[in-house]
Image 1: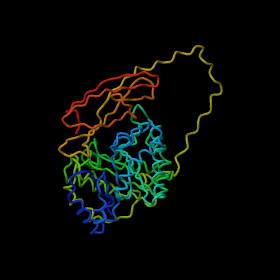
Image 2: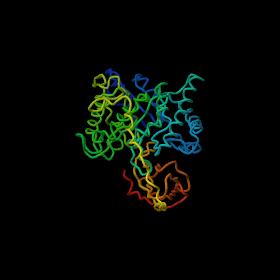
Image 3: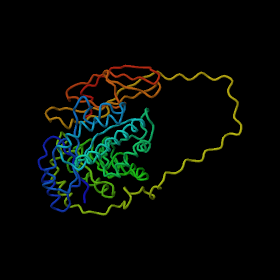
Image 4: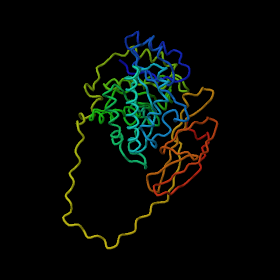
Length: 438
């Protein structure tokens, strides 16, 4: 059975029910639908009751945080933060039936302590979700994390050189609990910024593999060693940063078919949600062709067998990571100490810049509003780590920041960075609408 489903946001989704029915009537039901504050349950139950529904509520309460996570992420007490966040979200969940609920979305913790915080936060969310079932029978199965494409990062910033596996190590306890208690993991995969490769055009999923598309395989080969490999849903996927990207409808569908052929090889993947039906990047016009493909796709046995994903070329990974290399013996005679210690090398002056790294349409805005979500990254040089950040006087949880904007507007913001020695620098940055990369 095909593993292609859709991501549904606010906007025109005419033809969605017919898409579900076409696939279900052919005996190849859509595997999964991801909904952002859209009540898709009636359509799914009517046309395709075998389809999995994952629901996310965008909490807009200024006292508890933003749309994607709590306002005190990475700085507050993770257990108390989870308790407040779950209390703020569960009322909306109770009004929208689904199989799984996503508490957070696209969190980039940045550093290992940030991922340690996320793990403790998620464990408390899981405990609360399971406890709700014990209390009233209407508990919640959670869909954890929802990391954006290319996250967790793989040692690419000056702030933190830790590897992808280092970051997953911090989250093993929550993922072990999730697997043991029937919860799942969410990841996003896009082709944005990829040069043509692997037989796929630039920005396609195929071109981006394995660095963006199919990146989950590297993660699951490592997580499986620790029984921390719950079922996976790719809750956002597509060429470019969503919609048809720059491919056009026909090339986009060809790319989606290629991606599907790879997903079907891996047992752990429940399905993926092509981004999106509704919103500015609406793929609604492709639903008839997508439905015809899903309906006609047979159900192969996953090549991975009992493993969560296929083994790397050259054979399966070892069950346990290799041991550390043997340390060389100490020198038999320690050299005498220098008579005079050289003075410590002073740190370079603290400096930083702010870059606009991502731009995407606001999925909750009406098309005529032309609202965007901009992602800014603070790049620090000099000073002494760790650093703290603020924007217009408001503390930030890390070097990444999302903010709304309008296509015709400009952004003027004042950022402050302070290092571990208390050295601080403040700068103002201006970004014109012509610089928005979307």
